[in-house]
Image (cartoon, rainbow over all chains, first blue to last red; front, side, top):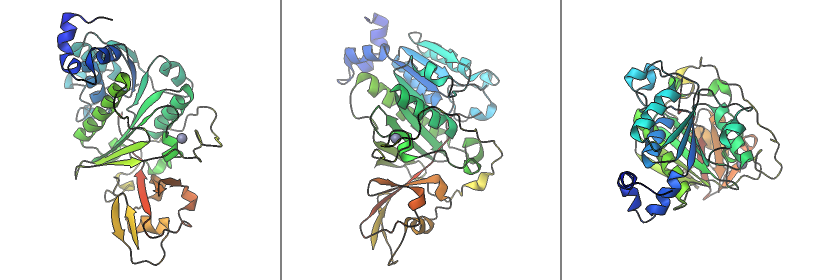
Length: 277
Length: 71
Ligand SMILES: [Zn+2]
């Protein structure tokens, strides 16, 4: 595709970057990204990917905007409360950049629908808040040979890793979901809004690097950070030969739905003194 | 003995310490929520109690983190 004068101006700060250029911007414009979860991570990621001119952005989320989301899910505004998140996100993306084609799915990913949804996208961004979805996304991307970005946040901490076929997967690090009575999510444990912004923005940068094919992705590396002390750490994580999915004797051959933890978990199940970074 | 935990050196007085004991020493209250890498290789949770550390070992504690979008 050729860019119009308006597009050349819109993307000029990308195009003048040596590692992006006209060709890189064309790759972005012909790229497609599926954002799973239009929440704390998906919101900032969607804003930047829209502004960057990603050709097609798919968003999947089954929820409506709640007042308690507004502290960090910056794509949703006060007037959007009670509106489906995918609709709210679509409206903002279209206002930011009418070049972007937005596809919405008002549902959650499950073993029986995820393969069909991810097949149409170059890259999958995990912005979910729960472990059943995180493991499902990992397994589906492994089976479909899709690149994806894992992201997780808790309180002042975040972690992210990029998966591409053949490299360390989420199950290489975390074999299977944690016991569900121990799992704190944002609603139980809290999260600093800006931490979600930092992490979702790192994930968006990984998407753009993947599309333009430049730089080093966070593959075989888990980036963790502690915003309270503003410390970042890149931990080398090598492929695990005992990985139940991509290891030498894999036991997982099909997708499965893990039970969603019920939200009756007490806030102090994880001591806030635990260092998580 | 000196052990590197999450890239920081810890000077330990113990003669013998297992991964489980190191987790306790580092105030990790819920080992179920942590994945451990020893010198770049993941250790199975069942092995935490029997894996004895030696001088200059490098240990990474990696935590489960959910978060992201929420109802
Ligand atoms: Zn694996």
